[in-house]
Image (cartoon, rainbow, N blue to C red; front, side, top):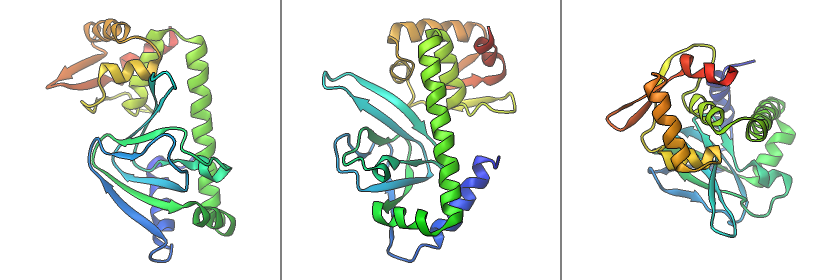
Length: 219
């Protein structure tokens, strides 16, 4: 399977071939809202650079973070399946560079351009597999294992065991929303992880030692 970096390069090439004026290049500063839950779903976004938080809020006001997106990701694809309104909110975590593609244009491109539709299908399948893993994780794993998995995902844990810094704007309250537990439980496990050398705090930034932390998922 092509790496995320190579897929991002392919997307950049395809997007560059769209006639001028057909897409909108946008810049968002950190903490700016890209769209809100309930807004009209009329476009797809491609994240060229930065990180974006996808969150939902219940009618009772309970909030949850459902995804943290990185460079090379698409989001708000639900409009292509007929969703009239945004079912989640998108917020820039860092300074972000985005491409906004109107729904009719994206639908036409997927119909007419084989390479684009092939890449987009791979993107959707990867996203669907991630959601299935999230569901299994939520149903069967403990809060501790769910937190460990979230930290590994945020640290881009893959083939290599390495140490990587997570953005300081991802705090324990955010982690609690992503894991589906209380902030006090997250604090308890984070203290445990730090004592074991799995994570560390450096100037407020959270650093994850991916190799040792991954052991928790297999206990």
